[in-house]
Length: 326
Image: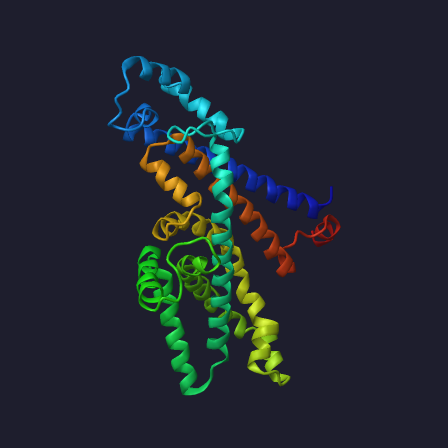
């Protein structure tokens, strides 16, 4: 195995280890937090107003293992997470895997479209700001910098409410709810804008450094236009930190879907998670959070691969080259 392959295997092993640690910590926190918040048997029996008798409650406790010591229940829950077999929902009486499989594609589509839109908005803002010159250009850059800051700190639920009031209720351009493509527009914008502001802010900082680098000065000395310098030289360097953050951004979008799917009454993993947390449906909560954590790790691996493909300096050097260098 050469040095480059070892580097790739090491990176994958580190990510898998991180994934297992994140999933274990998440499953542990959720398990005990939901147990502290109330008795899960109550959720199984239909809520606080249930009229189930002692015999029915004892039978349900035996079925779901609530009559076992807490540590046994915890270890059984960890094993279910490790094998991706999360058991049955307490309230829906269906396998958790089936519920996740039915809802995850909608959330993944929403988060993926939001990340793509965030990148389009961030790159467009950076290009406009970088190629603007003169007094008018200064005004444009200042305006865009202000918009980036506002976008990156705007809460998603607030932005979503504004979009509903203006674009849906006021102008009637888009529906608030529905299953068609038009119903995706407002949720995608709601998720994308804060991430776009953050990515643009990161790219601006990196672009300022790349703009003063020798290769950029050399390109300008050869008569290249500012737009050509940005598109062919500096933008690739400026995009590297933002690419590194894309994995985090996708995880943020998946978790942000909890709010957006509830706000726009969309089906998805976020809405399923919110309803399960409200009903103390432990298997659904742990299953949903575990899948979100695993998705985050997979996206981080893809983000690392893209970053290495864009920047050859990040690729592990072959062993012979390392030995010669030593």
